[in-house]
Amino acid sequence: MEKYAIIGHPVGHSLSPAMHNAAFAEIGLDADYRAFDVEPGNLESFMEGLAKELNGFNVTVPYKSAVADYLDQLDVGAATAGSVNTVKRMDDGSSQGYSTDGYGLEKALEESFGVKVAGKNFLVLGAGGAARAACFHLLASSAASVSIANRTFNKAEALADELKRQFPIASVEAAPASNSEKLANLVERADVLVQSTSLGLRPDDPSPFPKELLRADMPVFDMIYKRTRLIEDAGKAGALAANGIEMLVHQGAKSFEIWTGKNAPVATMRRVVENALAKMK
Image (tube, rainbow, N blue to C red; front, top):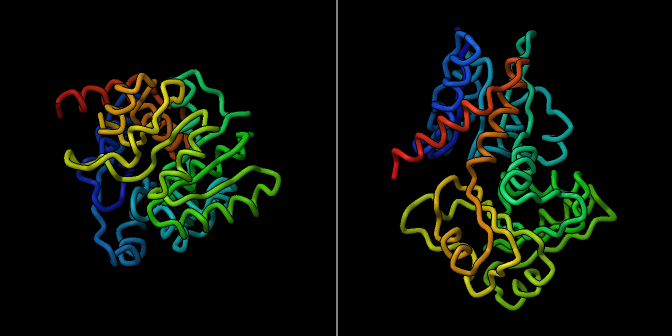
């Protein structure tokens, strides 16, 4: 039996095990996918131990950047973004890292809003691993501009500097999320708002974005795959809004194809995710 997993902290909320196990069953692959909650400080021991028994695994918060240090190779996308969400154990025993988050986001924006990335202006909330993968992919896919707003400004600024080095002719800007005046300026030119922080995972989390700055003509995409306060505020503002279900499905499908070399049963994966979320309500 092949073994796969998702690692992170926390991972109890993850729908990836149900999604991937259903996909494996759909194509008749003898494989099992589990979730491993890796406590802070235990990533190295996991990578030196249990990880070597896995055929592949996904990586979520907070290890998307840190896990790269323990891998033998990174594909171009993961190396450029400095973010890994998919690891494959190669035939020779080495490990290769990939990033499928950006691909998942691009597919989700197209399916949720009919938005093509090329030529569009994006405002991204957050500067962590998911934001990194998103920003690098958006610019690599010819986005007109990417602006980054984060509570810790120096992280947003550092990410913006990296983006400018990789894409010297791109329009990139950073701002502290607490500066409402600066944020309002970024909103003025944004075609799409992308939320990549962890705010919204818990029911009592506040929205990461001021509701008074939301525009009816600015679609809002929240990577968290449930109805968050930001999604609710966007709806009240008359804006199109979508959560992270489609992104989860499509980044997962790409991971599945990397591991197995087979086409992912996307419809089955989506159905499992939607059914699991319906039971959680």
